[in-house]
Length: 532
Image 1: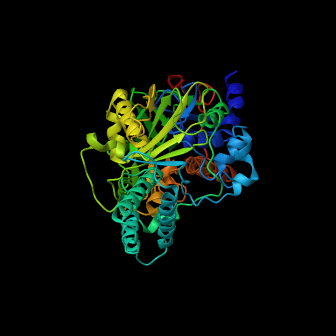
Image 2: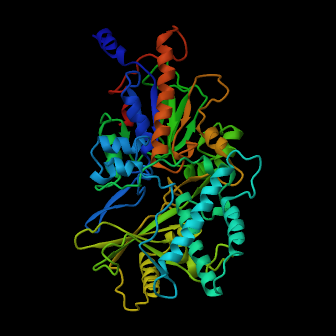
Image 3: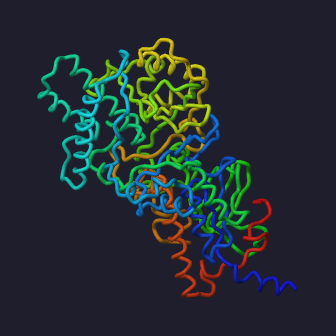
């Protein structure tokens, strides 16, 4: 009887693989591996109670709001997130249209429907459009230094400011208009901070900035919520693959670990969880956010990461971009309004104003996007990046609501504007397993650092191969900060493992380290009971 059981299990033999992190990179890797017969012993360890990571849709205000990822950036045929969403039937007709897929935005945010000034009342749309043309023409220029022998400035911000000073020499308007132009430009700098996930464009490296690749297509949203995509990927996995509320404490690698349920077999990796559980594996795919890696760098890997890889983790930028949702009973904006810009007249990108955060955090808020109507609720979504965004996370809902009510009354010039009836916001910097929003290539780093982060361990080719692999948006050289970069990175690491085991299957070597792993007893997938 025992012998027939062993034979029945033999076709399912293969390595134990652990994926750490259930965001779209981890889910993408798991889905790819589950489709391959060599990987029946797979688990995804997710620290929280839900999958999706920085894709997080919540039911609120009578509809669905995106607390995390908002748009598909560049929804066209070259975008795997768009392709998957289309396959699953998660997109609207307009987003799927060929016309929408062909639009070239250059990665720039569109003009606002209305622009309010802090002095009360609207700003001339012509002036806003003129400054947007200037700003985005300069942003386009920043992408031209990728292969330059040297750059005119170390950062995107310093280059932009240098160019703006030169343009100012040709401005002939009166002083008040010049100051308003600078205030509009300051808002556009803050928008770019949201796009790049940084506190200041002075932190974003100029030379590699052009390496980020913008795909064609007008950015689109998911009518039923972005999380529908990760939910569908998760639903395609065998039911016992996902393990929730299982934060990992330390990944012990380059070792020789044993397990009572698999006598005689050794594993090069042991994953130790916060709850004391320990799980040996042949391969571990690490997909945790860069912010988490930065914070846990000294304790998350044992032995510590090679110096070069640890240095890359320190150097790559990772900042915070948050959303603040305000719910109103009645809209104060026009029916065709999609985007409200807020311009603070006393600001300029050329001045390093640093008032106390508690007095001026809200000046970093770039404005509001109008969400599709949720029946009885009208909802605005504001974006805010950087240290001001992180400070906002420390405030109470009441404080945030009061501050933004005052801002809206001030900019609209209506002191009796009804206060929002509720507020909801993201807190990505405070989230213990995220510690921010997404990555950027910081001054002092380059695309090589992202490639270095993506390299598996051990790096020297000795010992068991591909013990620790790395995926996530911060490991994609040209699509960092995006969901499609994250998904592609998960697929990349799955394919790396598949290639290893396919090559192993083609040249069986009895007794070899990789080719002779015996079938692992236990539940479906071969994992011992404590895992389930």
